[in-house]
Image 1: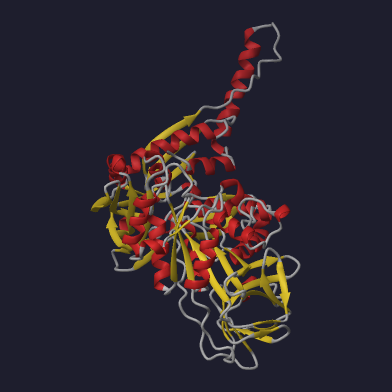
Image 2 (image 1 turned 90 degrees about the vertical axis):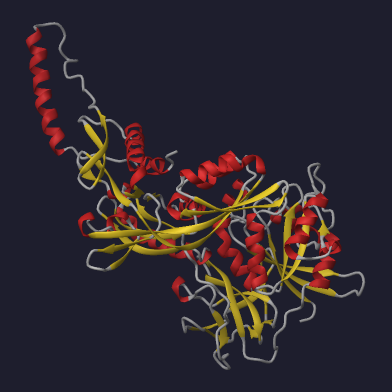
Length: 597
């Protein structure tokens, strides 16, 4: 046990976690040189294309130390940096004793660095600060070192200088891990207690769970029990995680590995559950696992209703791999049967949609994302509102409360003006402004969560040229003047395009959505009226004029009355068509309306 070290790599986006992990894999020769590629641990195409980590990845390395000639076993977990995947980070931290805290020498400490650091400190992890990208011309080594010392109160000698690109300082990191990260503590002879921190679905083997043993040991073929679900299974195969899964006969206290039990049903395994043996079970489950709190809700519907069951299977399998996805069945008048899904943010929603399409061949329609509200009726009832169609009639409504967040934005002083303008436009109030250093200022705002759901992060990045970092936490629910805005096509409301908006913005948004739909909807043989309404009051309207079929094309020469007769006949047909015309809304229209500026 004293030769095992379990640690994770945490940092803000783009501070070089995956690149540094690549160097550690190379240094310990875990991957042969011919198999080496950038972002070696990121196994999804989408991660490579975007250059971001979406899933945390566990891998075992072996390091032979020159001083004492002992071989150490490192269990490394590479984690995502984006705020939308912070749940992955919290699960990884629960399985470790130490954390490598990476800070980009050219950018300094940013919002996600701080929030991930707090997560690690809460779990009593040993923090090893690493200054990455020291080989860059723009590296501010002394300034950023001072920031790290201020933040975690370490000595300057404790900070390891490294470069994930060129491999500077990799040996120092290895030595620091051996010396500073504590070996796992636990009782080898106690009953088995293992924490499931991740899982995935394999179409041949069923559900594969990744776990970390805190106490006891596990042998292949033993009968195991999952604590929360109560299921009992045989451990058909156990082993450790290298680039591939390596079979073992026994895993002991402190080991990180995988277990295959032949489970085919995804709901029988829960991430955060405890594994124990049937022969001598442990007395209590492992604590320290927070429940996921979805921030953004959207409906996901199959394009054709007959694919509903397929979509359900796909979402179930995807949830195994991404435990922060929350879903429940829902029906919509316009779109039929589908699911109401909870996401941690807009990037998370986009990634889930992309993964459904790539990994499971599911083309879906996503409704307008929104957040949860509380509505109070005049009779004193309190209702949770997840979709705009749940909102009671305005006559019986007392008030609506919406969630507020505390947003921390760290930026350069040059961008304070534009950022304040953006946050005030989004109905925010500035509560605090602190200069961390002369070149870094922290702005704290209180904002309605609904305002940051759409494009807030993108706008913030563009006005600050990528220098602003953003992190947020829920505060409470506050009463707001919110109304339900419906989009009507030829008088019929399309519930998939309904949204809850602040009264002051309803006119502007209504006009914008109507204009956008006018561009997106194909013209028909009849006129289409696009209207935005609050209750029965129409606040905006656009009209798509009818396509005119040239009925007179076959008339060549002859009397004008022949043409007139055909045109009159067409006029009558058009009138009839307008009364019964159903408007087809292409899927692209649903997606593009969401990208309103």
